[in-house]
Image 1 (cartoon, rainbow, N blue to C red):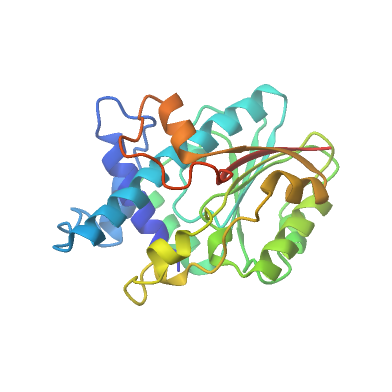
Image 2 (image 1 turned 90 degrees about the vertical axis):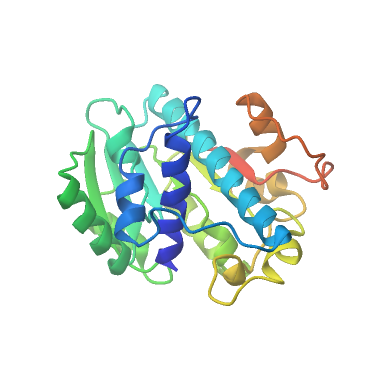
Length: 270
């Protein structure tokens, strides 16, 4: 699945080339090139497939900006401990300005982390905080591995699970949230992206085998705010349309699921 992270890097590289980019990711192009996805492949001939690709790319851009802002707010609140779950090709340790003494943990399986390190060495990239990689499968004892790497559960943490939960079955999502809660001191922050209701029917059902969408298995609960309250978090839910408009990128087509809760979540540990 880590090859999907290279595809996300390609989207971030293309966004970074825009004059009005919502973020700049100088390493994204290197990740995409090393993964064989740069220059990008031509758009599919099928119009429906092309629109699906554009929609997914757009969501990646908006969620990246949303979570960047969440992390800046967490840093401003005094949080100096960040955990990226399923970090993939995330380059926030390198491209964002971090306060002194910030420790950022990247948790992922060995294969993507090894690929990522090879590109970082090639680019001579220097992290702007203390960056700690934790090579562990999220289906295993990742809290133990995180603790061994130096994470301190007694002080607030900013947690990011970007583009991750949609790949996990419901019981795995519940376990992940329970484990995050056990490692979160009061005042911790969390940013999640959730698969919107109906997204599997719209995108995954006809997806090419092996593609990212073909591996989607979970959608957000009917009441994500209530769901997270049950896990001990005070959450706010945002729709893609809402955030896109706020960032000056309004979606021209009318939303098909306007009345449904959003899949961009910010939360504070109570």
